[in-house]
Length: 454
Image: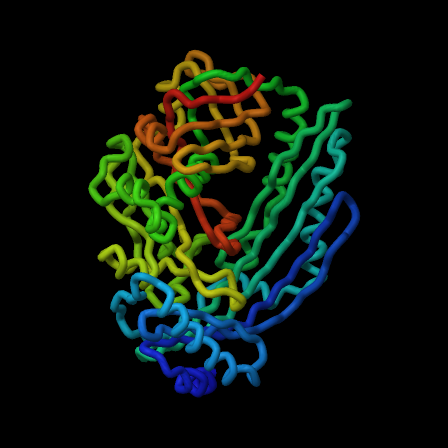
């Protein structure tokens, strides 16, 4: 394959060029209630050419090999047009030239598991909640995406890497009279089909929560000291903080660049945040990004101080900072953009039991359920929670919404637990979808959270 790509690249008359080729294979199985509504596999492939010419950078996507010559001509022409219409020429940070093949070791290769076996496994999980009287329906899907990627550049880099993602996800929906509740269920990862096996206990536990929510009371609105579970804390870290650590988000926003300046004290001393996509077997794991740059752990915050940022080659040059290997494309249909890999709050020293005792009175809030950010302000829903009284977890509450200001909340995180947990199913929709976007945290204690409710 590299010979074919070299033949295309040699025709790129530019200061820099690269070509990505990818074969993408999808498998999907979906149940809505007892009905199987989708099952099938699909394989597609395509190319992305990027060219830097006279300070302008452009990309072109094509799927037919016969369109290569026309696409080469177009991408160079577009780069020249861009160069004439931008104030500041694009420059790329220098990188190590790499020639490597990386095929991840899988605990069980999903390619070798039959569709019949996959279908029966999903059916078995789906039947668990449907066996309960007040579970009115489900929406459960299995998805498998295999990306076989090739990358070459005019600098001499040649990389072959596979990304294999398996995901089991959906909702369990309960109803009592006019009250309807739903709970999300998740399993999966990047290290093989084994990540979706043995999920019976997971489905039983999530079903029990969906049923318990029918008896829960709406939370009373107010300002509370709260413990956030790893999922909730991880989503906050990704959405409210992580995107402002992506250089392309803040580069044209002077006020945000000032606030997110290296060395600024943004959070409590207990807070350490890292993006580390090198962690093996995790959802966000990869070896090279889609610019051919080897990903490296990036310490974003240390003891509350901003210490790092995620970059493409272009933004690393623009900011005068180190490359990080965070330029990722959804697939062959897109040029890469800056994306988080595995972002998380690093663990502290306290157990969950110690956090509950420290909290005394407040709320224990679990599992994110949608949300939005507007600048430095955020609002997230939670799937459920519990009232905490005198250091003891008591009754369940529902209809929880959290809102706040990023910088105030970073300072109000007063205690970090020792029980780090990372997401098994990801998803970030920043201009493209990244299903391997992984987040996590230990349990954290946060003061003065604004809780919307009854």
